[in-house]
Amino acid sequence: MHSNIFPVEISFDEFQVQRLPYQDGLLDSLRGQYNITHSFFRNDKWIYISSGTENAEQLGELTQLKVQENIEIVGALIKHIFFRTFIRSFPDRILGFDPFLLLSTQEKDNLLTPLFPKPLSEISFKKVIEISFRPFKQNSKIIYGMLINTFYKWFLEKNCLELSNLGIDLTNLEVNILSSKDTSKGVVAPEENSLGRIIKVLHLKAIVDTNDGKKEYFLNEIYLNRSTENIKIYLTYKLGERSAELIINNIKDKRQSLNNPVNAFKEITPVANRLFNLDYKNYDGFTFNITEDNEVKSKGLN
Image 1 (cartoon, rainbow, N blue to C red):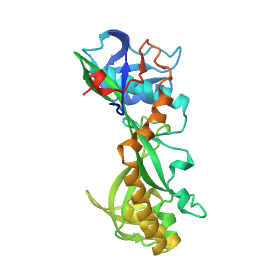
Image 2 (image 1 turned 30 degrees about the vertical axis):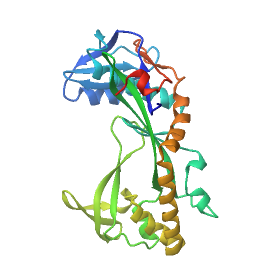
Image 3 (image 1 turned 45 degrees about the horizontal axis):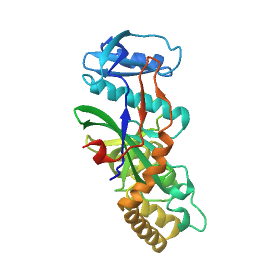
Image 4 (image 1 turned 90 degrees about the vertical axis):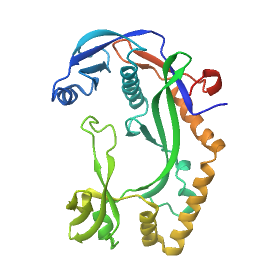
């Protein structure tokens, strides 16, 4: 039986890694100064450092660790190396880090395309590829596996100011705000965080009922939560109620079909094939491969 789990192969029992004693503020300082050439993460009382480029400056002391005794550190290195390797090979594709979210750029993966005689560039229902790395037990050892899933989600490329200027009533609609991690440096797309429902719109601002009470936000800083309910409101504005209803029902039927396990595996396979042959390494000697053998029973993954 095949699965969406692809084992990570590490060919050594011990590895070396740079580290520094943890201090308040040091992690942010290192990321701010060296993010282009290094990756940083904290584990217990240490800040661990992965050199991401050749001839990168040595910033910490080198220490020798055993793979099986430091599985969390191994996992963090795998994730950071995967991230750097991926963005070198496929720039401008990352939507999130751990899990890694990748938006398909193929038009066939926008399920709205065949539904419009003329495409609406600002709205889509596109495939998102989710990749994560998780530890599993294989025989007597802990190994990591790459898990791949796919799902589809709505995208609406208009902020609430633009929607309000179109005459759409935003009252009682749920909204999100975008926020960037301080470590992303523009490589990872901003994350959407739910705020709450708009109580009132006052010219360029909205009063939003949040978990922390009523707060004001500029309309150009917030976006509609991309729920089916909100998307239907926008489609109704653009196309009329009947057309909006037909599109929403059509997407619902397509989504159910794509959730079929056979179809899901077909979606995963071409993604995995593009990842097997990349060169996963840092410049302190930590390397790994992602194997094609995803037969769960033969590998004993559970």
